[in-house]
Length: 209
Image (cartoon, rainbow, N blue to C red; front, top):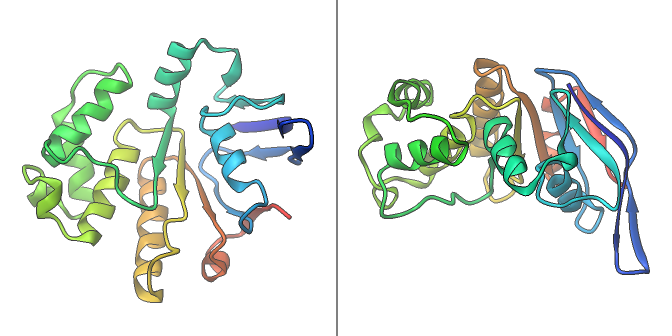
């Protein structure tokens, strides 16, 4: 379970953003909806341990995230939170397998090639495990980004604007992949977007005004 309680964040002395309390049960799929400037990025950074809020706390799997030391928080995030960005952030000089085992290492987990193969197989790109990012298509790179996000079996999977630059067909395909992977990995899914095309795919919505 993930809970955010009494969260607010201030930028300087004039701009403060308050967020309503939010309780997310394990395995649920949520849409985080908000226009530019609504505080969506701030909330994402708070949820992922990047930005300590001015007030309030985030409790994930029984741990109050912002009571952890910087090193503990890095490892906690690596083990419990998977993030899929709009553009892949892969190391070009490493193969796909090496990029994924690096994610395991950052979380202080042992290298697990069986897990790497299992995830790539579930995404239909096992044949690309020894390829370099420059040798993959845009769609394949997006799948690798999802693979890296789920490799450590995170409790929380966050996708930040995954469909905004895609046409309707590809947007639907990416959404289906995200939902499939959250189910396979028993991860809670939060898709953050201002793309209203994806609204009908979710029954749970947290909307920022």
